Amino acid sequence: MLDETMFEAEEKMGKAIEVAKEDFASIRTGRANAAMFSGLLVDYYGAPTPLQQLASFQTPEARTMLITPFDKGAMANIEKAIRESDLGVNPSNDGNAIRCILPELTQERRKDYIKMAHRKGEDAKIAIRNIRRTAKDQIDRSVKDGDIGEDEGARTEKELEAMTKKHVDQVDELLKGKEAELLSV
Image 1 (cartoon, one colour):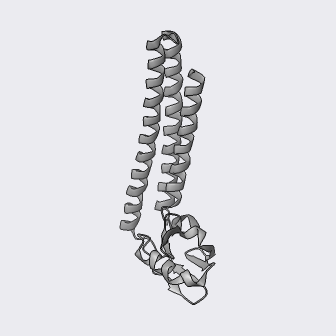
Image 2: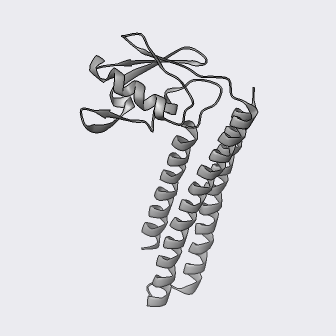
Image 3: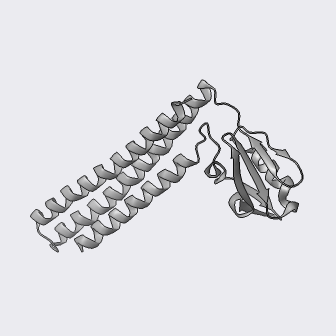
């Protein structure tokens, strides 16, 4: 029972870390990367479709992203979705591909991205703490029902706290790395 609870908590906390990594990857830095476009949905024949499913991505230069749609008919909708996104890029269409040249990040924009990274990091920490609370409730319920002893319950709660601290520290490390990446010019 306790092993199952701890395993489930560890698994869910690991998933929260993966989501945080994806969130941090989607925040724009000075270099172009395909992860920046991961959250974009394109109206593809009436259905909102992730851009990753509609096109291939290439980075010919550090600040240039070349997006080549698989279906040329979707080009106008892809261009519209990129233009309306919060990426701050103005796509240009040459008939075969869409070229996005990322402007230099201003100091003010960097600070905005750092705030966004802190918000996403805090969301990940909240998710981890919620997982901890659920697991702790299950442990307390087992102790109350008499399924396990109080000593074993206390030992498991200490393990849970250590696991939670480890995962929160991982989020802090990811955040620190992203902050350094955003501040480097």
